[in-house]
Amino acid sequence: MLFKEIIGQGEVKDKLLKLVRDDRTPHALMLFGPEGTGKLALAVAMAQYLACNDRQEHDSCGSCPSCVKFGKLVHPDLHFMVPVVKTGSKTSPPVSDDYAEAWRETLLTGFYLTENQWYESIGAENKQGIINVKESETIIRKLGFKPYESDYRMVVIWLPEKMNQPAANKLLKLIEEPPGKTLILMVSEHTDKILATILSRTQLLHVPPLTEVEIREGLMSQEADQQVVEDAVLRANGSFSLALQTLRQDEIELQHFELFTEMMRLSYARDILQLNTWVERVAGMGRERQKQLMDYSLRLLRENFVLHLENETLNYMSVKESEFSRKFSPFIHEGNVHDLSEAFTLAGNHIEANGNPRIILMDLSIKVIRLLMQKAPATG
Ligand SMILES: [Zn+2]
Image (cartoon, rainbow, N blue to C red; front, side, top):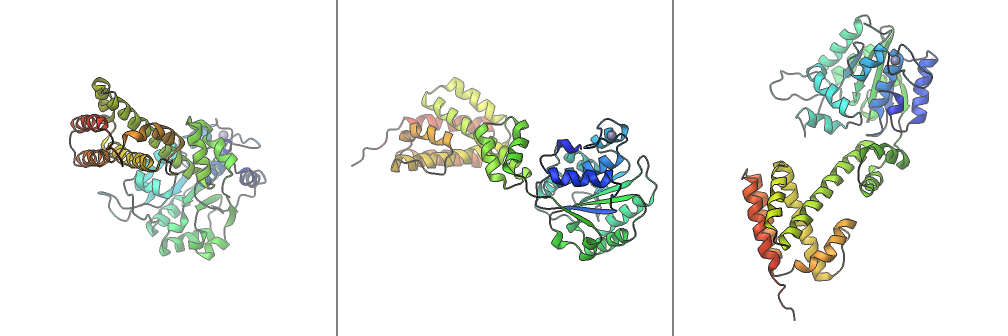
């Protein structure tokens, strides 16, 4: 990880660079602040800079043997200590080394990793991770060896607040009497849950929330719809992780919108041939996404019915949805809204129950063709 690859955080970067350049690297350093601001990336960039064979003034060289190994997260003097959860057949208690490969792969796909995303990636969503005493013992043993390739042995402790009491006590001992040329880099989101004695022996560096400008810049490489990007920037609240999540979620919504409107258009035109292509496409998307599409369709149908009744756009729709619905809502009325909702609900249930998606979706399409042909009942 190079400093220049990290979004914003100019002041923090300068401080870290200066510590190394002035040869004042502490034994224990803690980057703390809210989620999604790049703390983990900064910690790894700091370690890489310390180990780089051809350090530049403002960054690692990026090409020396040490940097190449850092790029793949395989430098033998770089260790990680992260919260883990007992999963599947693993014997307890679990330690980071049991998940070393998963950690490396997850991190290489993105350093703006949240705690929940990490647990999801090891198949342990909805569980609470922990750093246990066996983990502290493992790290102490590793730091007892001479460094292999660099002058320093480095350990990045991600979320030290996840240490239980015995683990924290062991770490405290290590920080009190660190072996020479050791850098313990901690990355914390809840310093209030860390032993005061650990904090008092650690150099603390606050990593602030990112600005909207920085987040927008960071999202530039994402190739997303401009409106989707702006929405993600506004809702990010200083967290690039949240911005990325919103972006992905919005893109999925946009895709659902396109699929729903296409289905309605083809059904209205009674274009069975094209509907068949549509069915093939959706059938290839995976059950979870198909279910989401049914839920999305139900929501938009409901909105259109309300729009039909009250003739005014609600705030629950995006700009694109409102535009579409102004033209579409006359077709959703008392005469068919109930049967349409039931058809989509039923399709969703059948998809969930592992039915054949092609048959379910084609059956749904034919019902929709029939229901869209129904005229609104005469009023008054
Ligand atoms: Zn280098």
